[in-house]
Length: 140
Image (cartoon, rainbow, N blue to C red; front, side, top):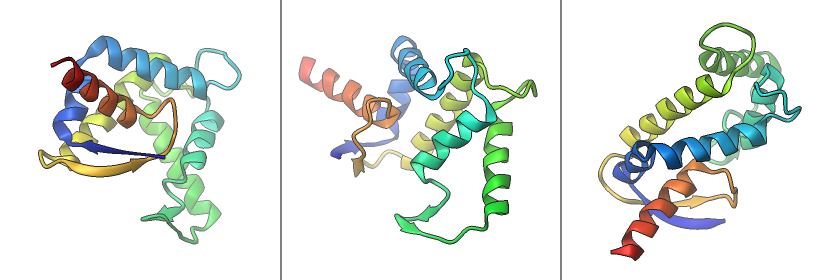
């Protein structure tokens, strides 16, 4: 785990750095594409979100969510990514949705810096945003 100081501007700057953002999102896509077929299936997206435990916890505390409700939530997430309704999520769809998610996070963070604890995850886009900001500061 690591602690970073981050705000909405840090996240927006990361998304605006198209080369870095696309490289990072493509690395995340590759890590999620468990069978290496170039698209993400419903099962691969679900596995990714289950591993993050975003839905099963509330502020880090486990909550009892009925399996049917979890399935509906995961299906809804998948449908949001599967813009063309093909039944799979391609790299372009994934990039587009991750950009929307990151910009929504930036809006939520606003302009006041906050201290955030992040899991050690080489694919964490928030960590990469913080690292990009730190590299700019070090270079100045």
